[in-house]
Image 1 (cartoon, rainbow, N blue to C red):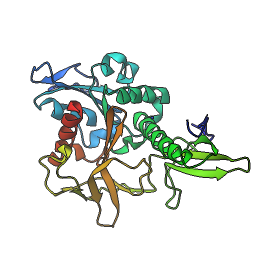
Image 2 (image 1 turned 90 degrees about the vertical axis):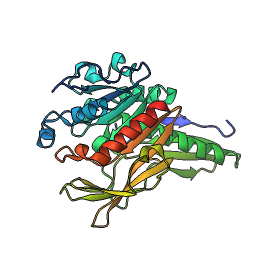
Image 3 (image 1 turned 180 degrees about the vertical axis):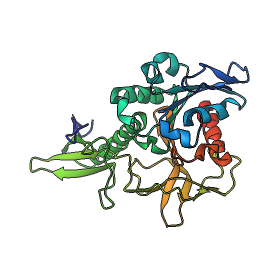
Image 4 (image 1 turned 90 degrees about the horizontal axis):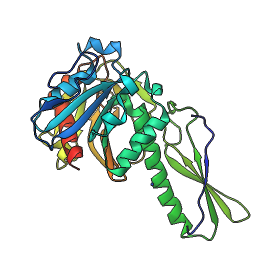
Length: 316
C-alpha cells in the first residue's frame, strides 16, 4: 500500500481434540451438539514457534479450545491450500482466531477485506493475537472502522456548515509502518478550508502499530478493567504472565468500544491489551500477550481469556 490516499467525495447534507502437526484434522470436536460454536484457528506456523510449542502455536490454542464443551475447532495454516481461508473454511466459521508475525504480507488486502465483509454481515467475529496487530484482516478491519468513525465526524461537521466537504484518505507511508513516539495519533481527521467554501477532510488511516516494543521476555501484569464483561468471567482482578514481549502505547488503532484488559510492565510501559470493537453486525477483539518463543498460550489465565472470548463472540 502506498502513502497516496484514494479520494472519496462527501457532500454536505448528504460504515481436535487431536490436531495434526502441520494440517488440520478438519473438525476437532468437543461434544456433539449441533449448535457448537464453529472456531477456526489460523496460524503462520513458523519454525521459531518450536522453542515453546512442539506442535506449533496455533495447534496449541486449537487443542485447548477443542477440549472445551460446545466448541467445534479447526486448525489451519498459511501454507494450507488457499492459505486455509477458502469459503469451505470460512462458511463454517463463527469465530476466527488469528496469529501471524513475519509473513503477514502473504495474505492479500482483498482477502482481508472479504473477511471484514463477513464480520460486518455478522457471519463471523475476529480475535487477533499479539503480532496479528499487523495481520491483513485486523488491518483491514481497523481501516474500515476508522472510515466509519471519520464519516460520522464529517457528517456531524457537515450539519454545522454550508461548505462542501470532500473526504480524502491517507494511508501510512507503507503498509507496515512503525510510528515514531511523537507521530500524529492515527486514525485521525485533519481539515483544510479553501476560499471557494470547500473543506477537505483527510482521513488518516491507522498504523495498527505502536512506537516501542521489547523482546526480552520480562513478565507483565494484566489488570481486569471490566470484571462484569463476559470475556473477563472467572479471571482474578490481576494476573501475571511470566514471559512475554512488551508493547508500549500509544497503539495506533481506532478508539475501542471497550477496553477490558490493561497490561503493565515494571519499566512503566502499559498497553490496552484486551480491546473490543464493533464492526457492522460483528466484532473484533484484540488480545495482546504473546510471542512465539515464549509459552504464553500455555498460561491458564491467557487460555481462559481466549475461551471466554470465543464463547461470547460465538453467541453474539
